[in-house]
Length: 315
Ligand SMILES: Nc1ncnc2c1ncn2[C@@H]1O[C@H](COP(=O)(O)OP(=O)(O)OP(=O)(O)O)[C@@H](O)[C@H]1O
Image (cartoon, rainbow, N blue to C red; front, top):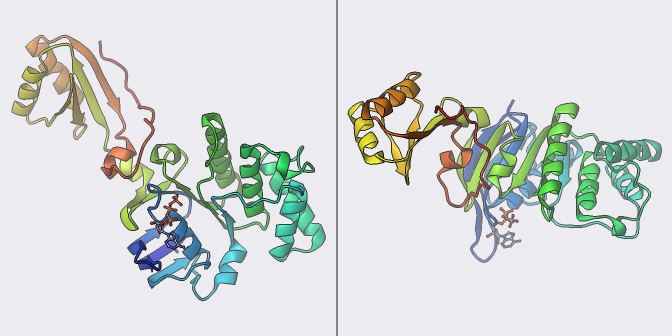
């Protein structure tokens, strides 16, 4: 059974805004990145999945349930971390998370225990009796994550969990999300407008743009067998491009570099041979994974320079 399944899901707000347009997808369990620029429709999609908003048209199933008719059942099994701050400043994290756990139906003792557990998992156990108003932005984000975890959900929906955090805080939050997904064995949908940020912790990615589906696939499907070679010569790049074309090897030029898809095993050796035959000064011959952002080919989805997977320079 798919974790999330939609068919022609559409949401139009008053004023003629179409936030989601005929979205059709099926996502398997795991950690899923829901990526798209601001205004792409991510929050709308999450609220529809929770049954907080009704779609204008189309169908969806979350954990096999229809949130438009079974919203309470869905919310009993789904944890939600909203994008914006919604935390009371004058209560402690322990009180707040316990309160929400009770509201989700747990008896008082169980709610207290679950709240402590959840706060321990997000690294706030020691600080749990401090008032939330005195917390840093990173700690507040963790309280939001803890409350989403407290009722032991099967699926977490996290709306921009790295919002407002500095680079170290963003890394720490993503690591935490990854660890929770693995340790708890639960599925997580992580929304972000930064594709490069979430791709490293996700099993699959759903990219939306202007409410439309750009692409939905597993990260490994997007990257494996799509490696590329970067060839850089100090001079003679035109000569090399021409020679590679004669050999039937397609190359895309970017300044002094050429990018060549690794379609066959021997491409690497054939390029080395061509460079040697032309007696060109080779600066670099690297193999790297296609950046996922390149596969989307959309300016709407931004990518903060993901790391390259290098095979190392050949000279
Ligand atoms: N209640 C509303 N009434 C009218 N338009 C809305 C409403 N909520 C969202 N929109 C519009 O719907 C579109 C999608 O918004 P949504 O918040 O779902 O996008 P998003 O991808 O989550 O962006 P962000 O990360 O900025 O929140 C936007 O054009 C937004 O202005």
